[in-house]
Amino acid sequence: MSIPCNGWKNKNGTSERSCKCGSWKAHWEKNSSKPWPLSCCASDCNEIAEVGAHVINSACSGEWIVPLCKACNNRTDTFSLKGETTLVPANKKLSGC
Image (cartoon, rainbow, N blue to C red; front, side, top):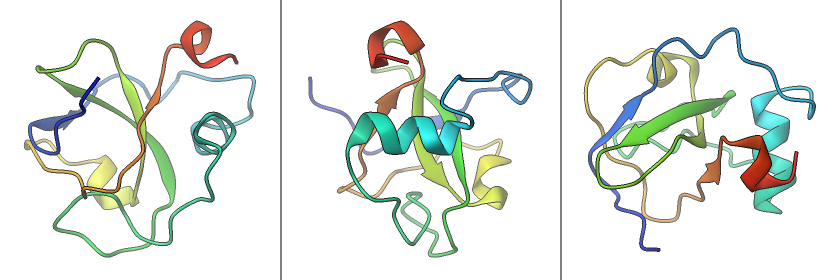
């Protein structure tokens, strides 16, 4: 499946969700098999990636976890992701958690 770079939004109401990985950052690291990126994956941001954020896109089904800074994790607008961004399914059954 081709993942679009634009049209992403934060999923509201996910702050209380947990994962047996310990955190959504750990969930992303485990399921991406990649090292945590140094900077936020929002295309217009170069701050430090701090959290595994739940994001959605009308062109893709389901919720995804992506590394974002805390400020971008609180965005209410639609944003683009950097082209090299790896998204991991938030659905624990799909991701193996």
